[in-house]
Length: 104
Image 1 (cartoon, rainbow, N blue to C red):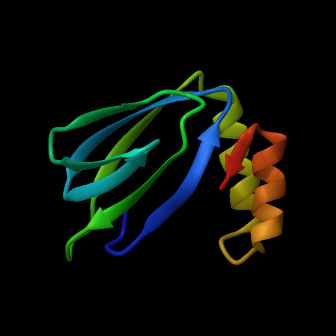
Image 2 (cartoon, helix red, strand yellow; image 1 turned 120 degrees about the vertical axis):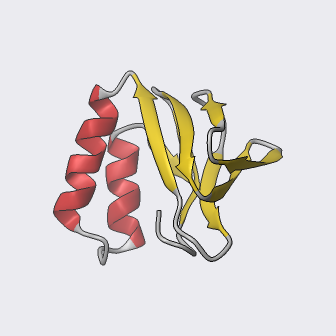
């Protein structure tokens, strides 16, 4: 994740996630909690809980993301790549809704 980047709060209805911080530092919002992760930390994010992530400090972060089960999430990312980063919030939300991923 580039320095200063973030993923907004969202909810997965179908998948659990696990973040393994390989480099740098991140901050995760997980429900009502704020968690800071550093190199070596592994953080479990159960489905149905609002969560988001951002980098901390002046460095990039490398985070390995496990998604279980992964098929729906893979299809979500394929469609998001097709519309591109410059697409509207509405377009991104529509794809999220189609894959039971709600942005808050």
